[in-house]
Length: 422
Image 1 (tube, rainbow, N blue to C red):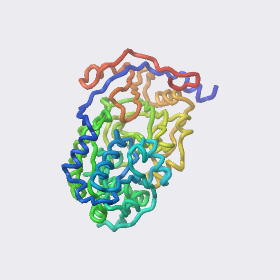
Image 2: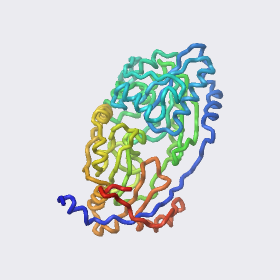
Image 3: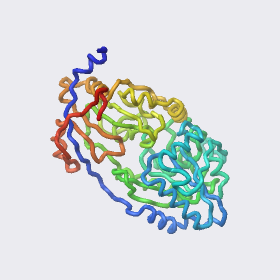
Image 4: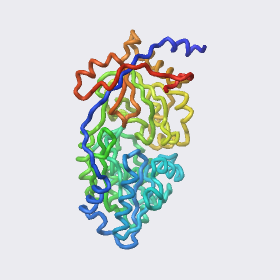
């Protein structure tokens, strides 16, 4: 038995209870039909002539129904006489390589077969202008050569800065479509200038490139499509802020203001830019955001397969497992941090040999006297928050909150012979 075993084996793990969290739930029943209607209403492809090549952005986030959205846009472009194609628009993700970005799309179900359009992947960009605050503005070469561009993204709060536009269409225009060079330039002075850069650099792209429209997607807290909007290119900077306000209203959360320990089963690039949504757990990697619950210790047990070894976000947390550490791919992880200029998020936390020990380490170090009374919650990830598990001592708070409901009897966590959760 190692010294680590002797220190952690006596630490008790409390029984948990499954709890349902309820959130506002607007939902678009027919996403493809709604999108076709909105594209027509905005006359999005009225300028498309027969044979025009139209580029469609394909990002790296796990947006619900994204393959269907992209397929529908491609189909409508064809109906207008155009020839659609997709291009990876994800800044430095995928290891900042064309092959890596294509692989990320395939991992999310976005292929030439599923969307019915070719995918042109390259890291090559064209400098199309200079922003009013002196930054060169880059655009993917294939998009720059196209006769039109359709920008597609989910609108949501960012995990590292605040502004009128955060994660959404303007960010996709500047960082996604700008590839690694665009992302690198936009992040050069850190997240303190990000809100300004998205506006000044984005307006250059909108003035110089042939952006036909932006397709804005909003999701509810259940990771379902709550709203679809089509914005003419020149209206994106003006109309996106209102959509961000609505996204905040629909945002998921944990209904506990204070926890001693949080266990996150998985993080990954398909979930959030930092692997997990920092706004949900109140743990940040820049000084430009704050808020959320106060959580003393957080342990992450795994990295999603779709993240392709990108372990961005682990450095903000306290503990992880050998399983997650073994998936940590430096080549896929470090380019993102080097580009964003935030090394904190890719540091390596304390690595424990099993799920059990990662949980016990979090409990041991959470600075409470009676470890059996730990206030603990467990979530799958930060986009799956409708059902969580909490320690029995939180049941009083659960029963007093109309947004929470007990969903089962108390149970002990089950571990296999290696100490990993069943």
